[in-house]
Image (spheres, rainbow, N blue to C red):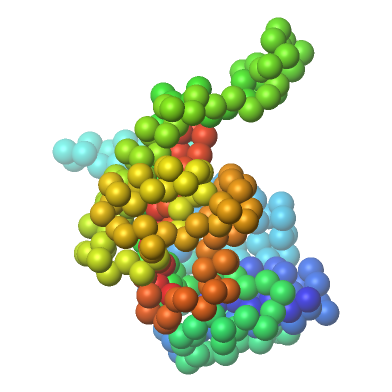
Length: 291
């Protein structure tokens, strides 16, 4: 098994360490564009619960870490010279650079390969692996994401039975065990919120819709996709459509379509691609990626 990790911050290094310790024969490599003593941010804070999870799952790492932490057993709020102590809400902290150096040493001792001063310009540079992990924060190709939910529309897309609200044992109608969708209402929701979330995302990052190279939408049906293109005022030729080959594979349809786009070689380095998805809940989201 070969694992490549982009980003040598605390998250990337800790993942590399834990996976290497569990599977010593696997090759684990980390690529970081900055030098080993660079850091962004002053410190890392652990709640009592976070430390409890570490103690439960990786007790040896927890034991090594806690001796390096500064801890506060409570929080004190001062308002208009009045002090209010809040017990049971303690936390611990460590300087980010100190944490990075500590985990770096453990990674090297475990056999993790870390390559610094290595900026990844294209995923092709690191795709000779079985698993690729992105842990590089602002350095990655995801420009931005917007995610929304609205529980008031939960009944538009649902399987009524089988959960805690209606266990199968209390089900009175056989049809409640099956997928149900109010199609027209869902279509209206997709067209309205799909348009809104893409416009919100582009505006947040100062991107003109004319600069979007491709849109990879949830493959609902061709009418919805055409309607979304019209509302967004983005030419439908920029929409990636795989309905004719794979149909609507629900949440997987976006990743299938994105993979299809990448395999087609139609995209170039630097192209902006929008992924837009919808689901039960109701939920909807959009992600802006620079290839």
